[in-house]
Length: 314
Ligand SMILES: Nc1nc2c(ncn2[C@@H]2O[C@H](COP(=O)(O)OP(=O)(O)O)[C@@H](O)[C@H]2O)c(=O)[nH]1
Ligand SMILES: [Mg+2]
Image (tube, rainbow, N blue to C red; front, top):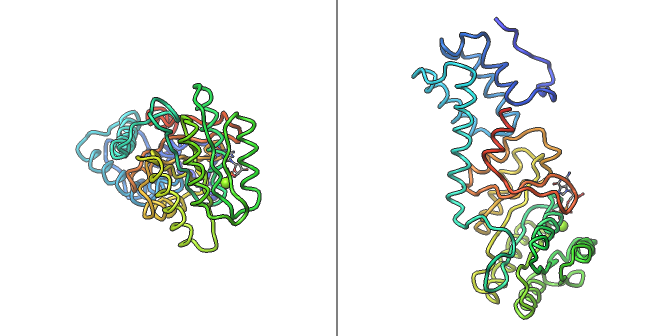
């Protein structure tokens, strides 16, 4: 019998998710062949929950795994890894299909400006993501306008203006306390008349009340659509990969207010756990589009489910 690792911290940083899974599921080489025991199942659940897979995904994965094992489909470590990889990939694939809109780079082959609305609570990385999307679009030779509709938080306008100057984007902002929807109106009008390829609308993550925020965001959304038919083409929810299950609550709240088209998982560089993306994809059928991997404008990667799962189970 291999000794189960109970280090007391519950979070061995050095061991990868896969190593932890193997530690708890394979108490000896023949466990898988004989079937999982209660202990192994419980420990596996704990590992998945600690990695932020969330209750729903965890229960599903474990139940499916038990069934597969009973049918003799999971007999070795390789089988186990393959099983988990397939199941997690399936969650992402289903979410990607449900996402509807094709994955597209900002500002490519459209008649009017392509409008991207960035949503999310304070500090998740919306403004930084706006800059990153500008950087990508500029790299492809697209013209971009940035709209700063956060007129509530002091410094929000300036932060975005600095990025706009640095990255060669046009900038539309508003006075402190101005109506955010009015800023969106100005920006959409300017984007249309100047014929930019892409308009990226940064929004506030907090107002006096949360209810007020959702109403405000819906107004911004409507206004851009009135001026630029079909806009916004993307509604990206920016969530912090280190925020664990809070992300689920955020996705629910914003998703109730507006139909999201994708998720940006920011601060992926500082998150040791990878389950959040799976949990969100499973619960909301919204595809993860981008991974934020640092604070710089170039630190954004298109989400690749295959690579992601490979890393997760490495
Ligand atoms: N390490 C890391 N930091 C990030 C990332 N994205 C944003 N940040 C940092 O998170 C903080 C909040 O970002 P900001 O874009 O202002 O969030 P906002 O309030 O949603 O607009 C800033 O210090 C950013 O530099 C990321 O992908 N990785
Ligand atoms: Mg911001």
